[in-house]
Length: 274
Image (tube, rainbow, N blue to C red; front, top):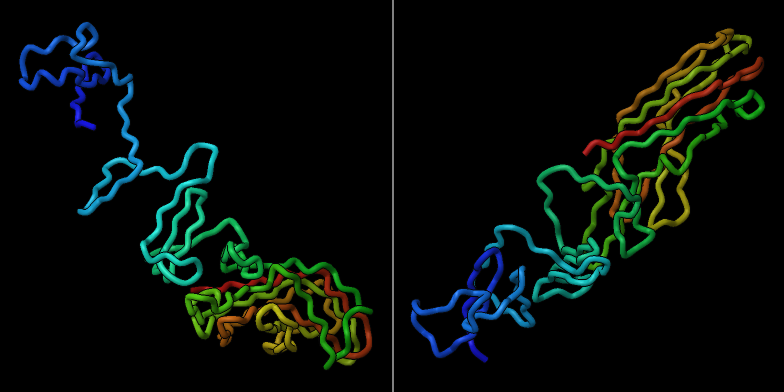
């Protein structure tokens, strides 16, 4: 009902308790006079309704929510979930219409969009797969090709949503990838038959079925009668992707006829520079 002054004395806060006094003299000492009542050792203000009509400056911190409870949020006046404005919740969830980041982005989760469990991405733009040994009987004769891959070699896009994003995981309509395949093999084939090593990729749309493999050349090989020969193939590939497509990479192997070929082990790695 009235505005009352607060003073600090002996490290405690005291609330003015004598409306009859309006001067700066003849006040009793806090703690020994009824002119004051204790406000407690800590001064705080609880605003049940607060309107800031001018610029506000916070010089220390602003805390949302309460300890042990994920309540509290900041949002724009025009916020509509999934379509307009912005929201920042105390549990760490945030929603914005468009974001411009002038630096690096990192994440410790595969989830890119926490509201949609299908919109995922690798934590960083790098992935690799250690390919175990492949015996002769499991290596097809060229031109049939065996593709070795796993889910770590999927680079995820994101779907176009309410905000109208039509772009891929890395924000480029044509995304560059650096793909490297290296390992060791034995080739005891006769008549100069080769063991072919290659790289391939395929795409899918909206999480649907994968398309056919696109081979990025089979120009690495292990020559006949070579035991424990190492091989390496590196390709820089520019792949056009839409906003709803994912891309997956694989190592490709085949062999010439006759003799025995063993792929002793290899690693395929993919880097997606931004």
